[in-house]
Length: 165
Image (cartoon, rainbow, N blue to C red; front, side, top):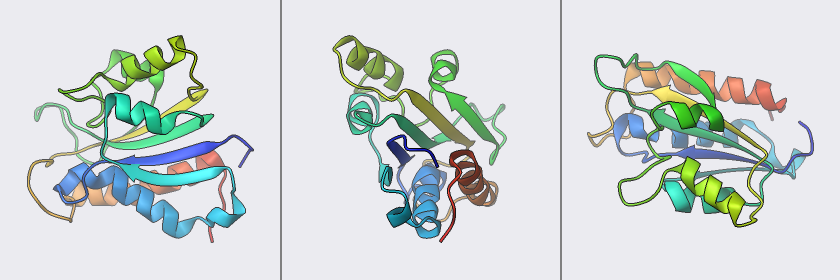
């Protein structure tokens, strides 16, 4: 892994079936990665969107977000993993937690922070997992989403060139 100050942020609510995919992937990364070997790497979780999410990302040079991606039921292929950039977010439906009805979108929040002179990430990578159930209470994701979690973890480990414990 290079020396960029990096944040891996799993988004979601782990007791809402598939909505917790980002949190579950982040927790699995924490289990597999020796954080002492990577002082510039932080792995955490959040359920915030928009402005609050942007605030968590400030002062990191690279951010990897892991989130649920919910399309309309006719289009969704649960368990499908998308690797997106900030520019991609500008053109597609937002991931589950990058926007909020009571807040601004992550894209708008980052644009505003940049205009105000804040240090925003130079690189934003989003791993968005298509989900099917984000409304029912359960700590267990649906089977397709559960199968996607280790694939997301492996993709991030490879992309950031992180060694396992």
